[in-house]
Length: 320
Ligand code: NDP
Image (cartoon, rainbow, N blue to C red):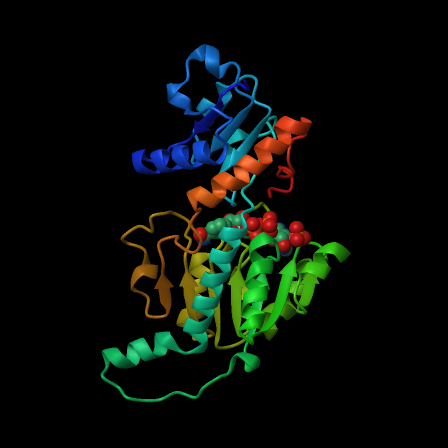
């Protein structure tokens, strides 16, 4: 019998019940219990914690913790809160999450390519005015980030006939390249201005790290194609909100679709809510699916129990 697996974090009652049921069903051989339901003696035996919106103080009360499995793909908060010396963090890499994100990227790309923000405004003015059609083949989507989610989005966009270019930190390895569709790729800060300048729609799928915080500032937004649009489905602080508003107000950018913000929920007083060229979404691009996420956790945990090897984990110095 293995020591219990602790579910740590503030999920809310309904989600906690859902995640516990999914995790228990995916790995009936394990005993998954919420942190608060464990006695101090049981806590002292826990090797693996499954975490979401966790309180670092609770994680610190698991002295034998060997590694942590995040239920989220983005782990910047966990990395920050747990700090140096924390056990390895395994983040969620779930094909269903990637599928959901790729669907969101395609949906919001279509929204912009088919001029929905302009037609919405025209409808408000009861204005009947067809606009010129721009085909996907004449529309370049620039993906910032070509990881698990960016690669899935690239496949989906290419299938839909868009031209796709993608930017990452390092050039994709030969293995990663072989799994990618035939798209233009580039890497490193020097390559960013060109990618921004050639893209009609820029989609951000980067992790939030020391390097990406504030990345899309006035200078980078000015490098975007005039009339271009931005879709941020990654993390709010990657974009400097004031600079984005200035670029929209100046007419340099046509529209921004934002799923993520510096503060969430987006405060009622934020100018983003009422800006005519901004679409606000309440962080819904790719919610974790408890059932498929639990299957991923179960696979990683079984491999660990069988081999003693901790699954591939986040490079905390790099931040992702
Ligand atoms: P990955 O770690 O798989 O991929 C990250 C990509 O970003 C990699 O291509 C990486 O480059 C690139 N990257 C990182 N830092 C830099 C940098 N400084 N310059 C250029 N490129 C960089 O992450 P995922 O694809 O799984 O997830 C991406 C993010 O999406 C998550 O961190 C999370 O914040 C967000 N997310 C949002 C959701 C939502 O609902 N809105 C849901 C789920 C995730 P390289 O390939 O060289 O390593």
